[in-house]
Length: 323
Image: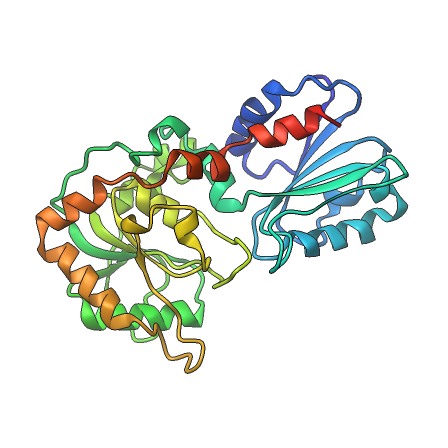
């Protein structure tokens, strides 16, 4: 499209796929579409283009609500914010509303779509097209796997405490990243997981790493009720693993809850997961019972409705067409 401008292209594979999937249906030639990847409330790229009528698509992958992002955009753009069409792809609008939209007398508009990083991230996976996501990854998995893997690079105390609890109750746990709990109980593992594949498909190498395990401990960076979901649970599911997850409070509305072990943080004591005994029991059953593990991973990771709502982009393209 001649009217498309891409700014701040951090993940070119994501951008290319986003453009082909979302904008191939957009036949609006009235104004320029600007795509911005924004991982900061004060990204410089947001304020650069102040042309009235611009359709500004802003993908935000961090924990802030779309309301906070929009507030920072208005501060950067000033009166121009009411003359452009601002579309935010990110978390819920706030802790009470998933989506919100406004139309302004100055000619502009605002809307947010719930497309957190865990949603847009799948665009980087060329080997995992959307049609295969109902069954998960390859659909056929080798059950001869190690027990449980934790792979994270940022030390966040609640999830480190949770990992210590898991290592106390599950035998032979492995840590494949920089983090290994506060007690360093798991065995550190280092694997060459197809770096060329990882380069060409971004997180494809992480999926290969996880394919050696039945369980993956994959809590998000922020335990929340505002729709913040990262790539971690997606990687585990596509690898044929059972995720041990804490993060978005209503994760069962996005993925099949029968494919997930749901850990719940104890917000009163802050010492760990309040349901840790149940987490350990479910986990060891998966490790010790081949039939049980096979039955779980044979289930779809999401319904067709969940797939279309969480990963689909047709609604965004339709909205742009109607501007």
